[in-house]
Amino acid sequence: MIASLRGTLLSTTPLRAVLEVAGVGYEVNVPVTTAEKLPAAGQPAFVHTLVVYREDSQAIYGFASAAERDFFRMLIEKVSGVGPKVGLALMSHLSLPSLQAAIVAADADLLSKCPGIGRKTAERIILDLKDKMGPISHIVAAGTIAGGPGAGTASEPSVLGDALAALVALGYRPPDADKALRKALAALGGAATTEALIKKALS
Image 1 (cartoon, helix red, strand yellow):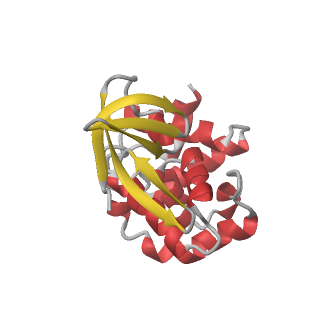
Image 2 (cartoon, rainbow, N blue to C red; image 1 turned 90 degrees about the vertical axis):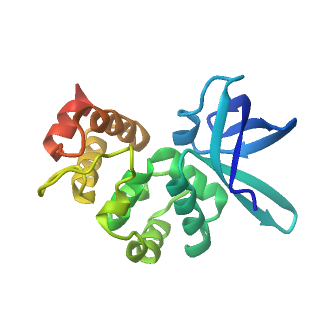
């Protein structure tokens, strides 16, 4: 099993990267949320990987963090009807914290706005994964949302989920709303409230 790859990034697109390791070029499928974190072509790069074997093919999927890779593995292994293609699309439209927040909050409406995810599939994802999300400290990805003390902070899934739902209701596409919130979280930190996140994302 190839758990990670470190080498030189030869090329990248929103859903695919080619990484040269010891003279071998590996084609790696990546979600948009990982592609946007990769360096420019010719620079050193590192991705956490999962190899998925099928009867007639095999493919490598790469992620910016081990937590994202593990979530992807759980998604395609534990949820009936969700394969790598759908899993990659889901993780391309929402970052890991937003996905986990939506699952914990049972927000099927938000999940079903992602391409390839109908209402029934969204409900199945929630049903199959909600109990596997673990405590809030694990839901908040290290380096993405800094946890803060007290109630009503961005370290709580409901706060992030409410802010995301509000932006979508205002007309933002889910991936655009998610990206704006990630920037807001980076600027405000984990103690930010729902209102503060929304204001910062809209500014």
